[in-house]
Length: 237
Length: 347
Ligand SMILES: Nc1ncnc2c1ncn2[C@@H]1O[C@H](COP(=O)(O)OP(=O)(O)OP(=O)(O)O)[C@@H](O)[C@H]1O
Ligand SMILES: [Mg+2]
Image (tube, rainbow over all chains, first blue to last red; front, side, top):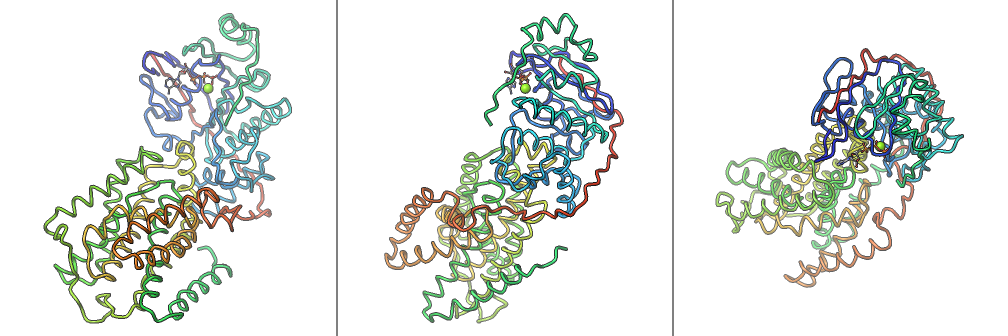
């Protein structure tokens, strides 16, 4: 993917297999979100293809990709501000259940699973950062994806909240949903990921199980070598 | 089918009661005229609300749809002798088709950019009608007088008009009730909040925007036919003028955009003011009532930006209490066959 003179993703090729949890890491500006945007249809890659369930989905619109079973969350959380938590999730469940009563029942199921049930009547605009992150996941789950891609769902959370989020990710995997997760919080992603993909300056520099990645020379140099600091970025919205 | 609640029945009865009683307070034609204008602008406001209130498409181009309704039925009556009821339906459908033609190319525009485009569209339409000889251009068309019948929607008395416009308004309100509770309503509101999120959740935002615009145009055109049958004379100045688009927005904004009854309330407040101002000030009234509007808008924007209905409905959302008794059996039946294979780049 090229933005003018900038190659935000360059020669990035990898696979994700059903049932896996794959982590995507890389320094700030490495092109992780851009890769997500290409996969989920928000950007049309200037070159290359995206295959999903054996089909070419390159250039499809985001809503078409969602209907095919690939859902995403946003790094900068975007709750539907004027709608309640329940309504937010229902917008997702309507994807598979056209009737309001069915969409509501499914949304309630998801709210209970994701621990948002108690907050179901809160407006999107009233939520705290951890709840917004959770809502992003709940809403995406509502579309009943086969593959869920999470863009920094744990950034800005405290250790207890990270623990809860990790548990939620495991629950989602247990339902047979494949996960592809961008994460800066190493303690969170390393233990749960089956494989890690590392981007640096738009290029894929390493791919493999977490145990290998932490010892990979190029990764240490590009990323962990920066003093192995865990970036916890502030999210303003 | 959703079961009809007691509350719904109460609201319907209340509506019918108020509509039936209000004209009886005075026999003065002007008073009854003001009521009819409340109904008509209520209908226009409710129609605007489908675009502006729910979907976030702040249209300043409703006058074009109104004009299509007025001209379609009038031309069908004048040239072909068709009943205005048929003309009303045809005008509504034609306006919806034109609306789709307007909504599609503007589907990438958001907020003020869409507003400007809608305005340009309506102004172009006015210029078109002013210069089109077949519809008598700027001269306008007087409607041929028909005997006092329902078939040709012409009455000497004001009461039948009153009944017709408030029936049409009632239908539009019912449609909105249905929309609010259906998937379409959720989709409209999701688009208003964020088109990006909406598309990520599988919503074809372009299609939903077109649907909202078509629905809005349909009801606006119906009001246009009603107007031409009521006034029995149309010209581009009266049925396609930009001021009309502005008035429609104000009716909805003052009463409370995004609520079912807000636009009706807005019409009930603004129409008496503007009609009496126009009557009192004669031909100069058209400007004055807009000035009065401006002042009211400023006050409301300062005191209650969400419109007057916001005073009464602070925490308004569609979803009430959810049923806590619904079980939580999570069925895990998915499984990607092949999952993702990504290969991006090589510039
Ligand atoms: N729409 C765009 N137009 C131009 N440049 C962009 C655009 N989106 C991203 N970029 C640039 O592409 C590069 C990669 O950005 P991206 O957001 O993908 O990084 P990231 O790995 O997600 O970083 P972070 O960890 O900060 O979220 C950055 O240099 C960014 O400035
Ligand atoms: Mg990012």
